[in-house]
Image 1 (cartoon, rainbow, N blue to C red):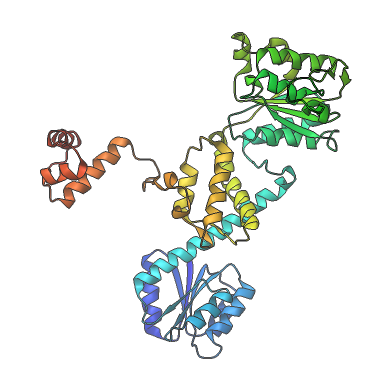
Image 2 (tube, rainbow, N blue to C red):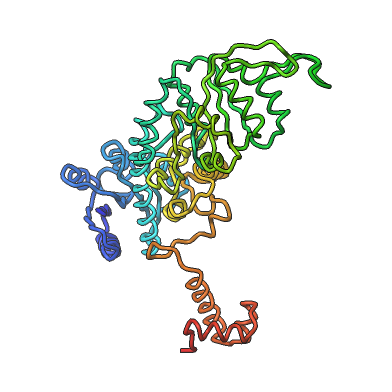
Length: 445
């Protein structure tokens, strides 16, 4: 990274230059703000350490010009007269941080790392937003991965055709979002979209919800009720968890699709309907047909086109996009200005398996933004179970044996290899600890 140091004290220039070059940065030094501003014509800096008191124009004036000319450059102000008021004023004008003399090199190194991480984060966010812009018309269906591009391609082709569709995918992959998108891109877009979950209901309850009922049809039916299918007339019906629908009810649904009519429970007058059916499942319906748990004729009626949604782990390149999308969405909802996650938190999110898929990622981001107290989210803002994830320096996960060996080694070091005390801390019998020492080669040396 390119760093500039602007200070009229030569000793400060030399100390900062030496410390930052040891960290691998390229460092230029300047004795005045005018010298730096002239140099900006031919040089670009990622970070500038800027003294407040300078010969000629002041550091605060230089800061204003820097933010006007190179807004992406991070600036850390230096002063020999620490002041909270000055710090607040500097940050309001765009400074990243504010330090006072005498300078502590460890503080300088830490601030440099944080400032450059912040710059990298902002650049990455801009890139992700640029990628999101072409997809905004697809609502929450975000993706640039090959699997999602294939899904978008099929949606575009099938939406105008008015045929029935089955969407297959695990929980949290966005099946209802796809169904709504198909409806929105179809000729039925200005007609009702009605969703119904087929799982967990008795046949009688499903029948009364789907078909409605006439007054007096059963005890408690004190008035006529319009069913979901009738409500959705000329629109789209989305039937989630279709594989959980009772077999007898599957036959009634088949007749609706074939005859395009329904009768309310307790009624004998058929009602003609114009409906498009989109069904969703996380089950293998072909296998269910073979096992006699799903009607083959209904399967073929619904399965004119099938759309397979990938798990989130099958489209990992979409995770950064989804993180940025949910960050922007929930930051706006909760009236917060969240710039993003720090590197440690991002590493955890990118390594996590997401058994709940996109829905789980959305919930994690919503929780983090809701509880955030700073503009950059950290590991502490993630749920407790995710905070336990730790990326090893090699970029891979430790095996269970590797983690156990390292933990035992640390306890042995703490107790100066006292086996009795180590066994007590580890809550292990001494014989078990001795076997593990032999297994892992943890001799006293």
